[in-house]
Image (tube, rainbow, N blue to C red):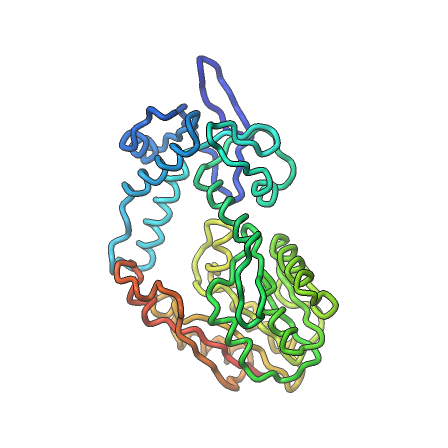
Length: 361
């Protein structure tokens, strides 16, 4: 719950968040008269602003507050970069909006967000208060879900759900589409997310794919994508922590690439605290491979360029898990971020390579 004073009365409402953000302790009511400098100062001091003005003006105010946030200094390192990003998220998360029953935003010129909010928060929709910044993310995720992301390796679109990582970086998908298959009878896709790699494997002729994920949102997302692609008779999506039961001639995993702590559900697709998923996959792989089978580990070396992991660490993890390296395929990123010299992580991104490691028992 979140509480505040308004018009001389104490009020409270359900605190709405899909990102795990705590409700602010101090809240003041704000409207179109609020200046950006004042809003930014209050937000930095930990005072949230519950908006009662025009919705479009709230968006403009949020952008103005964002321009006042200090970016991470170039060359400051990964941890300072994340610290600056976290501070920015906390500050901008202080601009709040109200919800009426049914996911309705009772502000002038507010869009109809009922469908988008139902996808992110579920059908239960009592009066609530939440972050404007989060709502804009929910709206964006809803548009991505409707439009989908075209995947050339599939010749079709994948539709990511809110909180499930979108396959907008296609190079890792292409690696799975191009690597030589050790067989076409059975494959496991561990940590399937949207189901894109499971779909690619089925599209290449693998007769049965078992796709797993621990996140219920990912299981629902992958199931919907597989059904939309007409592959549900060949791809089985199950909720599991890493591996399904049994062994397969091919086990594929694209774990989060950075060994750091996630701060939101979407971060879980990027950050792997302590390398838990990576080590879990490697340590369990031999027990789930058939004698002549292969495990495909799809991993960026960005963590190495950021000083979060070394190549020696990775190779040692292979050896400790009783795995041998049968081959490796590499691809450079094709997105634009490595070209952005103003990016605090420019040097690391410019050197990044994504690899498909072919591992055997």
